[in-house]
Image 1 (cartoon, rainbow over the protein chains, first blue to last red):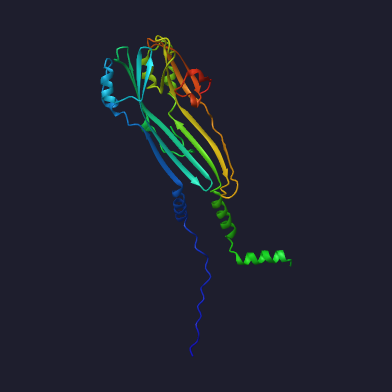
Image 2: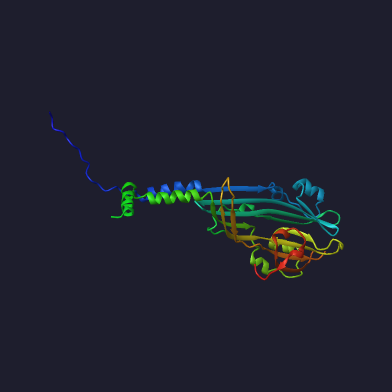
Length: 142
Length: 163
């Protein structure tokens, strides 16, 4: 009968988890808690950027180029047409019972002012929707 | 040794060290269905550049104001019965941040309860320019709109001295 051999593991300290692995694990755990969403209202008013509409342009021509306005405002016997495209970006982080959400909305706006004979007098444009950002509430926005 | 102390010692022997933390984590995870603390920041547009606002003076025409501030958000006629009455152009922006706490009890067979608390401002700052019928700037001011007043009559405007 041979001698029974016994194996005993030496007592070793558990190896510490590297910091980068811990950070990666934490990052992976947090990733499903993030969400992003984008909402757009109307179509971009690209034609107002590309086409030159000088004063005196008939309202019919403006509508043919820019499309139907979202709003027509009467100013006495004159009128003003509004075109608007809005973009909203939402970013959020949800951690167990705490949820943080940031919502940023900016618009492209075009106002066409017409005289009593429906001829363009002023064209006001602002294109700001590209400045919309995905940010969390604690991040600075310009 | 008392029986209470014996039981505690027995539990300590059986349960690994992280059990308390695991129990706490599970409790928190279960609570997510009942309560939520939410912090929300809402940004709509940006205020006009203060350098541009400083250049505003009564007497400027509509084109000069548009060149300074860009396109307005709202254009409103001041009075419907007089076609010679001027109009109002408004630049509107909004920035708000606040907490809301919601606690609810999702009990099917019994009474359910929900409590919500929210803190946020309900005023919308704006810059308003009033023009006469010849498109000359008469006056301008910073004003606050109530949210339901957006695009409605200007009687709801509350004059403020802040941004």
